[in-house]
Amino acid sequence: MADISKHRQSLFCRDPQSVADYETAMKDAVKAVSHWLKNEKMYTGGSIKELRATIGGFNPSKDGLGIKKSLDHLVEIFLNPSLKVHHPHSLAHLHCPTMVTSQIAEVLINATNQSMDSWDQSPAGSIMEEHLIDWLRQKVGYGKGTSGVFTSGGTQSNLMGVLLARDWAVANNWKNADGSEWSVQRDGLPADALKKIKVVCSENAHFSVQKNMAMMGMGFQSVVTVPTNANAQMDIAELEKTLNQLKAEDKITACIVATAGTTDAGAIDDLKAIRKLADRHKAWLHVDAAWGGALLLSKDYRRLLDGIELTDSVTLDFHKHFFQTISCGAFLLKDPANYRFIDYKADYLNSEYDEQHGVPNLVSKSLQTTRRFDALKLWFTLEALGEDLYASMIDHGVKLTKQVEAYIHAAEGLEMLVLTQFAAVLFRVNPKGYPAQWLDALNQNVADELFARGEANIGVTKVGDKQSLKMTTLSPIATLEDVKALLDLVLAEADRIKDAIADGTYIPPID
Ligand SMILES: Cc1ncc(COP(=O)(O)O)c(C=O)c1O
Image (cartoon, rainbow, N blue to C red; front, side, top):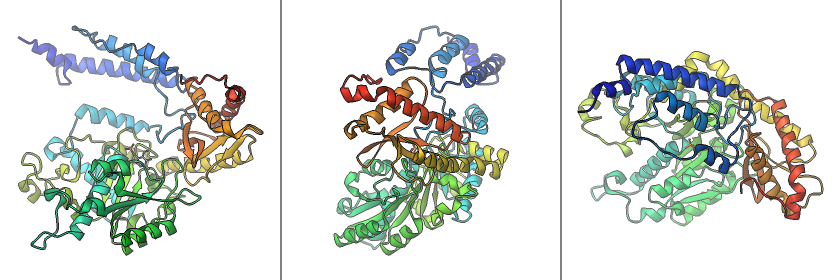
């Protein structure tokens, strides 16, 4: 017979031993995290080889180590060598430092383990999420309502956008024999739709547009990319040309995906101009505001999102420039009637009976079934901090970016590659007189060296055919002095390795 008393002690429940273990281990875990925060080094894990050696392998035993010993082990192999995302030199990605409120909310989210698919699995949470969706809709300019849902992040929100847009376009353009609108959900795609339906986005749009269209069975061939202008935004004249060309080829532009905050350059597309063209071509307009959506709260830069209220759907991501813990995103749909394209009634979750009685079973609005109550993090942060402090934290990075840009323009050996618009700096190290053929390798290896030593996490990407370094300067605590110190490290590192790269004797830290 199983020893139920041991089961009770191990399960999170009202067993006295379980509660005592929870309190002790949570205190120990919090203490370990505080200790880790006090270590000022950005990263201490070393190279991939060294970190593999530290972790060793996964070897669970029959009897288990017990909570204390196992926690100590995880502190050693996971917590201590983890990247400190709040460090001012950790700016490679759209990977943000997090709010204290987000951390506290996680404790409640995890402890209660509510699931957002049906009201009876998250009674308070379901109602609270609807309030937050309503609040976000008003910030966007969609007006009051509950049409929208929290998601795992930008990729899933973008999937909802292109999926609804495609099925809406099919419903508008294909009819059943009785004249009713074609339902992709019921009947699949019409035979000729695969080659006819197109989604148009800029060449700088997030790769999830292609991936999502491929997952939807449409293939990469269904995505048409539009060239960008010198500021990395979708070129409006090129968009017009593309749309006209598609029309001439008898294609249907189901959706234009605009971007508010491209992943590398932070470019924000001209939403008003794109809306006009979308209307002319009867296309859905989805905006991927995974990053730029943070400006909805901005005091100084909200105007950059002008026109967002004219879109049909929006991707927002709170685990980027809103400083929430992963995961936390949202999808907003302007016209609730368009949710019909993914409507599904499961008797055990969102029955007709429940719907008639207005029960908030949020599974009807989501691609997920079981779903975390991530909305609590944003709720708590807004309620605790207030909008003004939040706005100031969001705006800080945008202002810092302008200062960094001016500094790089004036610095010898550094070169800006794209004008800044939001909170990203695309630049490269370019020592005077250094042969152009080695510049790409030099920039790649400067970043790799600084990471391996735990000094900095700088992004490496491409601008045209040039290897570019990238700083995502969204941190609300980073200062110009912090970034200058980092750029000094970049220059010193470049100086240290540049000759070895050029004469072929250099060994990269990644090997
Ligand atoms: C513009 C943009 N959209 C979407 C995404 C995908 O978001 P997620 O990683 O939350 O799925 C990203 C990720 O960086 C992004 O930069």
